[in-house]
Length: 355
Ligand code: AVJ
Image (cartoon, rainbow, N blue to C red; front, side, top):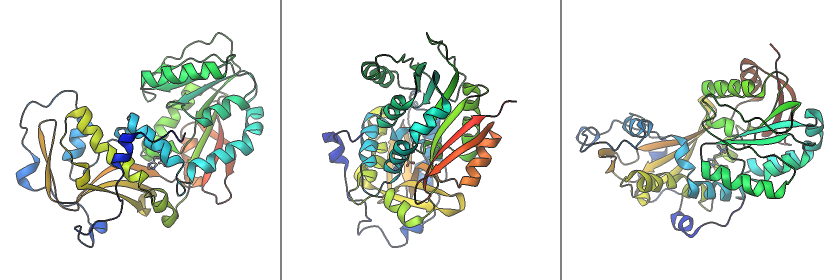
């Protein structure tokens, strides 16, 4: 965490307020239709390395992009920066909760656990957990990025010489074969911190939690960190910080598309906006076009009206009853919950219901 910001990241930092040339009312603007002259024509062969969800999202009436585009190497470094930003409370709150409750939680789960962590366990939280657990049987990080997995496994093995680290490269939404550890394990603990559960649409979140219940097997455990804050002011500050780190993180999506998919976005022609959508209980990350413009992506011309937005991420803030219901539907029963003093960030300990 708090990796030094790469020079390239600094150059992406830009003021996150609305510039003078964006008309009043833009914040409330519902994106209109794309002008006829720009949306449709395929100019060449669409390179097949551009995933369908990218093109379809940009051609949709309400433009959106998959949130995984936020997390390339630069995006991951910028997210680390966000975690140290004053207004972004979830990481600090969760670290404090782990500090307070891990001794008890680790004792409850017991010795010789097999620890699974979907998403790369790069940080401090993984180390806190691994230090607290009694004689863990093995640690299994699961991620789509093979290089990140290998790097992390190497440093974890150095830091925890007695720990068997068994990285698994794959999509944790698809069926996975887990490696057999050298030592036998008494139970599985799935660790899913950081309120990452909020990135899924609620239906997908439930499917994902059910996948985790399968991986955990009967009698297995889940340690989940989730943010339940619905206070608009503090959320908008957390997702649109004064220093513009979140703005740089969001705008990096466009540079990422330029780098990896030969798109022609001018990041300076967009601005970052965070929106609280109370009806869906989620923060939305938007990239707002500062002017009417056309951008090429994979041989397609994508038209933007001035003020039109691309939605890049949803961060759902589930209430405690809502998350309890989702866990139940997914085959988990809630054993313990530890909210922070403001009842925002909360640690959940759940166990698979033995069916
Ligand atoms: C990594 C998904 C947990 O939702 O708070 C932070 C991502 N986006 N600031 C979150 C994020 C903007 C973060 N998660």
